[in-house]
Structures are given as structure tokens and as C-alpha cells.
Length: 505
Ligand code: SF4
Ligand code: SF4
Image (cartoon, rainbow, N blue to C red; front, side, top):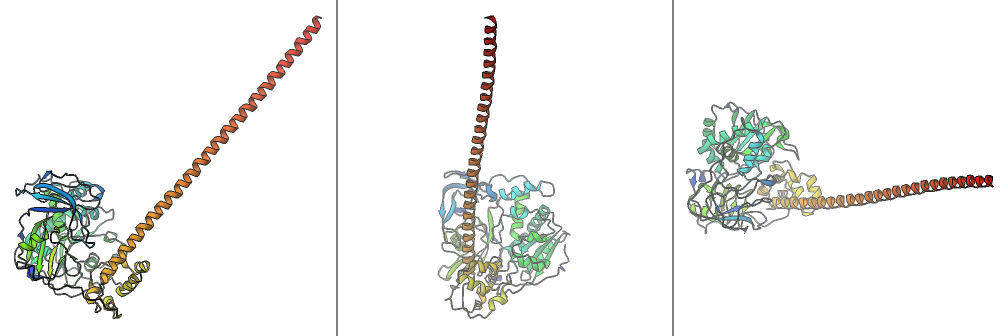
């Protein structure tokens, strides 16, 4: 390590917010008891490999790793009692397929897999292991880590995103304070997998204890640098952090790998280490529980699938005090409709909010405040007008898909316009239109190919018929010639015979 003299390149816009972080960092991470029931979300396109009634153990894969979808695992031992739609926190509010396990209190685990190391084992084997152990981005995006690592671009820099910039959330902060070596081991492991030359770990300056612990843990690792970044939201946005640490801007529609950079979250790095070196599947995560009415705010190591209600109860939450619950932070979090919804791999925080944040929407007064804070350098009010007018193509031309949904524009808008909701709707509609267009394009191409195939077949048949006819005619012509010759021979023989008879007379 790690003199930490990395130059910081500020990004445009952003917000200085009250962090409310101290509330949940006063006590060590507590371990939540295994609940009576676990509800494990089955990812889209995943193929379930267990049956109702089957006994499972902690760490046992419940789905196959086909279609690039990382597996999910039983997070304690027990019996599978249903595979059915269940309440899950998501923006659509739809029930989603979950595997429910009735736990048996024994908490038995399967044997860990053999240890792998990217320095000695084959890269593909390591990527397969990350899938097999269910490793995804734990910062909130849930993107499969194996896909991120599986780049054919030359990667110079691995960035560990330890910024955790949204107010209230402190799970990564506490992870670094208590398990810094595990995070550093994970960073080194992933850097080896990418053959990256350096690791930059970006931490906001409002986490002095985590910075101290990480600096100590990385003190003898030459390639790892702890970089302290100013506390400004959303420094933890992938593109924003890359700009802060490297000065490079990820182009619109481009990927960090195009710049020779890969960025992963702190807890993801730690879990990747567990998967590769310890052979352990992802079955638990740290969740911050904080906010209004939470009497024991803090961070809780929770088994995946634990009902959110259990977490709130364990943190002694007074349900009369808060107005709404949110999974995640106050700007990007998703409202919780049902406390029976489970802890997911992406559940970093359960926030109890004292007030309903949504106020009555007023007309846009074109103040331009949203433009000033947008870290993606977009024109949020323009995107809003296009979306309202259902001019989605124009919104896309104005960078709709570069919007990281950080909510800075929402936060400052004096007219309380839920701008991000408009952008999400526009993205959803645009994607639907694209999917529909792609589907009809595929149908048109299939139709044209079929027509061409039929035309080709008809032409081939006609050519075959013509060739047969030609052959037949040639055969008939040859036969006629033959017949003519035989007639001539017969006539000549008759003439000879007649001549002979005449001579004999
Ligand atoms: S902040 Fe709100 S009112 Fe102001 S320009 Fe943007 S959308 Fe309009
Ligand atoms: S939500 Fe999108 S448009 Fe609004 S500030 Fe963030 S990036 Fe800009």
C-alpha cells in the first residue's frame, strides 16, 4: 500500500446530504437468528433443481446455473414446503416465485467446495465457481459478478466501491470496520482474476474507522490503494466513482471495461473471496436496519430469505412510529409493501421513514435546479417533458439511458415532480417498444426467409422437372434415331434378299 495520493477528479452536480450514518454504527454487527421460514427468490430464467418435500442443507444449490444465472442456495437446513409466487420487494409490486423452506433449527451445512485460486487455477473454472456460489453485486444492482469478470478487454484497474454514499446505509462501512482483511483478500482475488495491475478502493471521508481498518489491512499489499473521496452523493455511482478515481468518463452506452476498469462493491469482493478460496456459497448478508421507531438501529448479519418483519422485530421497531418502509436508501430505495417480503441478495438496508416522502406534484417552473445537480450531465426537465409527451425516442436521444436514477433531480425539484418515476416509465416503455420491434423484425425476417426458401425450392423443383424432361426428350430422340437406323438396315437386308432371289430365278 498505498500512499493515498491519488488525484480526485470531481464529477458534475451531486448533493451534500445529511448522512444519518452514526445512528447505525454504534454497535457491532449482530447476527440475526435463523427464522422459522426462509423465502428464497428464484431469479428470472433460473431452473429449480429441488422438489417440494425435499430436505436441504445450508449452502445447497436450489437452482441450476444455466443461462448465465447464478445459483441460489438454501440459507439454512430444513424442508422445502413451497415453490410459489410470494411477496418480494420490487417496483412493480408483483408477487415473484420463491422457494420457501421450513427451517429445522439444526442449521446443517453442505461441505464447502475445494479452494480455487485465480493465480493457479483456470479462469473459466473460477468464473464457474462464482456462478455456482451465487455471487452477484451486493451494492444494490445484483449484476452477476462472473459476467463482470468475464471480459476480453485488458483491465488495468479494479475499483472496489466502498463509497456507500446514500444516507442511512452503513452495511459496507461496518463490514470494512470489522472484516477489512476479508475485503482486501477479495480485492486481491478479483484483481488476479482480471490480471489487473492495481486496485483502488474508494471510501468516502465520512467513514474514518473503516478507512483506518482498511489501511491497516492493506498496509503490506503494494498493488492496493485506499483512496479517500469527498462525501458527496452519488459518489458511489459506478460511472461517478470511476471518474473520481481515474479521471476517465465512461462514454454513453459504453462499459467501464472499455476504459480498462472493472468496478465491484465491497461486500461483493468479500463474498467472491469466500466463494473461490473457502468454497462457500452466498447465503447471508449484512443489512442495515435504521430509521424512525427502530429502537436498536444497527447492522444485522441475516440469512437470505429472512422475512423483513423478523429483522424489524429483532431491531425492536415500533411499527406505530414510521410512515413507510423502504428497502435501500431514501433516494434510490424501493418501498416495502409487505414485511413478509424476504431479505434478498441486494437488500443493503431497511429504512423506516417518519414521513411519506411523496408530496403533491406541481407544474415545472423551469428553475433549472435539476440540471445543476444531475451527475450524468443530463437535462432532467427536458427528459421529463419528452416523457410526459410520450416522445420516448427524443428522451432516448437526450440520454435517457444514461440516467442512473440517483434521484438528485427529484430531491431538489421545488415542484415535487417525481422525475425518476417518469424516467423509469420512459425506460420501461422504450424497452417494450424495442422488444416489440425486435420481435416483429424477427417475425418479418422469418417470413422473408420462408418465402425465399419456398421460392428456392420451387425453382429447384422446376429445374429438376426441366432436366428430367430434357433427358426424356433426348432418350426419345436417341430411340427414334435407333429405330430409323434399324429400319434402314432392315430395308437394305430386304433389298439384298430380293436381289438374291431375282438372281436365283
Ligand atoms: S427542478 Fe423541477 S421545476 Fe425546476 S426545472 Fe427541474 S423539473 Fe422543473
Ligand atoms: S435521476 Fe437521472 S436525470 Fe435525475 S439527477 Fe440522477 S442521473 Fe440526472
